[in-house]
Image 1 (cartoon, rainbow, N blue to C red):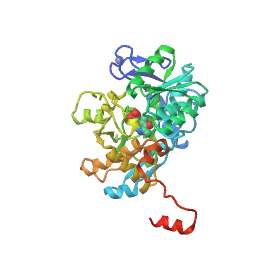
Image 2: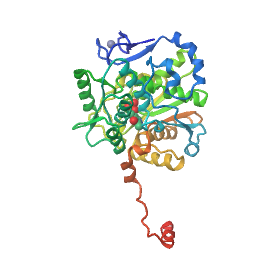
Image 3: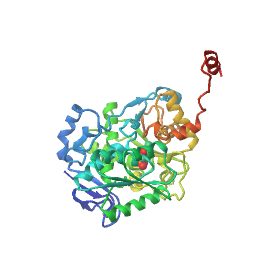
Length: 401
Ligand SMILES: *Cc1c(COP(=O)(O)O)cnc(C)c1O
Ligand SMILES: [Zn+2]
């Protein structure tokens, strides 16, 4: 049992309504459950496999979901990177291990399932890449058309490949992500298509399960959870989920929610640093980490609450710091992630070095997407393979060079 509530004016909407923002004030909505009814089921969660659907009583889907077994991703102890920072309790939750290679699948299994329960016949999104890949996958699984709008020339190769292969209608917009999102919102309203950007409150419900899994995997609540922040849906979702666990009495403290952005696209960091009442959009966001190349975060009002309410923080890192950490994760820990994902660990490193985060803290960095999502960025940074004649002497010579 649930309804939707406007986070600004408190207006309530029924679970059968097709609505993304408040009709009275235009602000964001969130899903609210009757937590008393959920209380008893929390104990049964431990008997189910680790996945999004382990926590189904705290999700809005009533019937059988459209699922490809999302979630249940590994939590790795970062021994070498942790040691370099003087930390013994540094972990990475590898969300690149989801079906389409990013955490977006957690949101899409719930969002596409809800689209069907609401009687919608097609789904759409604007995307910096991973949302489109995930929507294409879940549209295919559900057997309904998926439309994705991409900012022209700004989407990593692996993600476009996924969207095309899984059969979405892929449209390249001559404009940036923020413009593509405005357009797709108009399109959905105009054509009765279901919108699955992170303005959609049901998508965030799926994504909050990252926080649940972290606590189940560690067996306790970490001091801090660190994430890359683009539209700020994920950090807000994890906060909301853990808030619900607090209300249910499952956990007794909140981790400090910590957001990392790129120097070239850091509206949330600016709002936190300057203690602004709201996020001021940036006109021309720019970063190599294309998924967080966002100037006007959709979930701006939710993220400030998530960070401030938990005494968390936000920090910006340079593209060079992001790429260096992408290499460190790959070469020192065996964890392959796309650039934005490395931003969480790069930001944490900076916070520890600045003395803002204590070395004794138990910290989980969410690494959000798989290395193969963006092969071009990687190839451009690495030396090419060493060319060699097919003889042993040549091979030995090549190995020496
Ligand atoms: C979408 C995405 C992000 C940003 O998440 P938001 O919810 O938009 O803040 C970060 N990393 C990856 C890999 C993503 O796909
Ligand atoms: Zn409202």
